[in-house]
Image 1 (cartoon, each protein chain N blue to C red):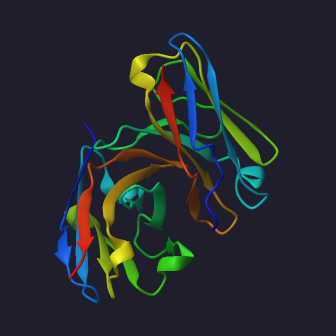
Image 2: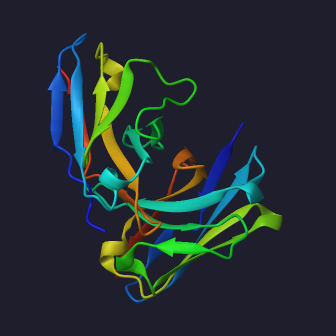
Image 3: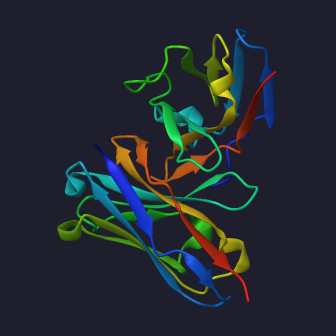
Length: 110
Length: 117
């Protein structure tokens, strides 16, 4: 149950697009349809942004999109806005019927 | 409105025990898998455990098996986490969350556990 690998930080200017990667194994990301992404502003509860690799919950901006290729999932934020500055975590269901989170990525809006 | 409210956190000495609680409202609690997630200071999120709606099926992260026990009381819309043999590295904010089919769709605000002498 090793954590999924994410870049520690990603930054971009307002209006730009950024992509966060999340690399796992065939036991989790590569072998599952159930990859999710969470936005976490420190001090607040995490918020579900993407589920089932690429689906958006009601109320989440269409600027957030998800995809997957092999053992790597990705979250893209288009039209970056100041309020997008937060920590982002991927998560995957696993073949052992457990869950695993990514190491987390701090997004900075320059 | 779905709400999850954790309680029971606090300061515990190493080796001690504590039980966290989480009360759910605004949804049919007994229909959902529930989960605990924690975040140690300066660290990322870590999945801890989850439990079937009926309370008879559960899964844990390997590193906590044997020390932590997840349970629920659907009559009280409550989720619990019993934590034993606590260590300093168990210090964290503990979140309960609802599992909406495949992901954690609603979260509580968290309960802080500090393990220190």
